[in-house]
Structures are given as structure tokens and as C-alpha cells.
Image 1 (cartoon, one colour):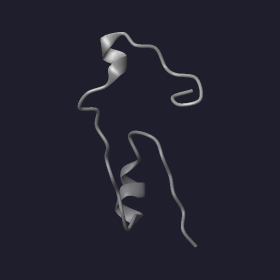
Image 2 (cartoon, one colour):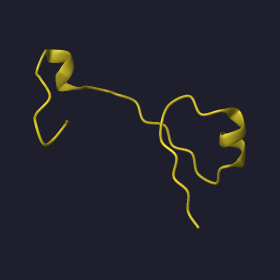
Image 3 (spheres, helix red, strand yellow):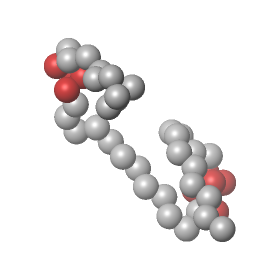
Length: 43
């Protein structure tokens, strides 16, 4: 069985029990330029 959890600020107990933990961070995003979300893509 595989269990995938998503979200932010995982409790330390989750991180400790996990086999794989990834963290994503924004480097550049068009939202910061004031462009709206596109229907069917971002929402």
C-alpha cells in the first residue's frame, strides 16, 4: 500500500515515519506579475 499526503508543515512524526519527503518552493510564478489564474489549468 502507498499513502501520499500533501500539504504544508507536516508534523515531525509524519516526516520521521515517511520513506520519502519532498519539499517544493516557488522560484518564479506568473501570479506575482499580476496575471490571473486560467480556467481549466490553475483552477
